[in-house]
Image (cartoon, one colour):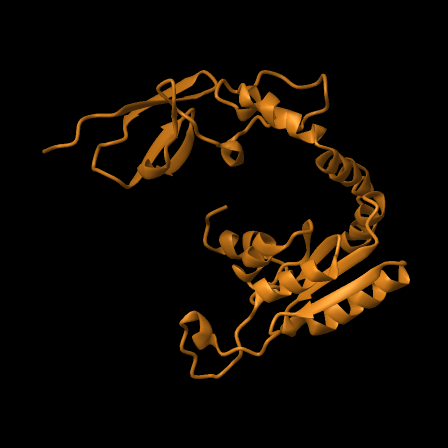
Length: 250
């Protein structure tokens, strides 16, 4: 039996796009709204009063939300900033712990001349943290050592844990590796720091996915000091500066 039509409507500013989400079955849809191209998967739509709830900030050409207060213009009709639930999210900042971290964040990164390391120290101090954990990758062990020494000089108590802790075979997670390299163990990294009572944990170079697992299991807030990128020397933004330009995608 052929699937019935499911007409969805997307509004972007004054532009409107309607399409059949069931056309061609489950899969990618490509539409153009007000001169901008969108690609989205039919299986991840959320519906509310017959309208597709899309988050399209990366494609927005207005970005009124980032303008100085009082200088903003008209928001796109379907902008997340205009939705009712935004007030619900704002109320979350009344939680004492959330408010404390939000205040510390707001005042810690105002000086654009400071490095990320310096701003991390500012954040930790403004939040009232005294004990900091470092979860680092073996390939960035020198940076882990340097960061620990720097934080200690700044007056913090530091706990550090290596990604290969436990020295387990990857067969423990069902992976056969003929190189016999021990598996990375982000869960143990997080749990050791939890038991050490760290108040803020810093990631230095954990692999993609391992960083996600570490964040999942960490009890303390987590910030990333160095994001590992083998090709671009731990500077992932270079992919867009160089790689995508070569491909003609930006």
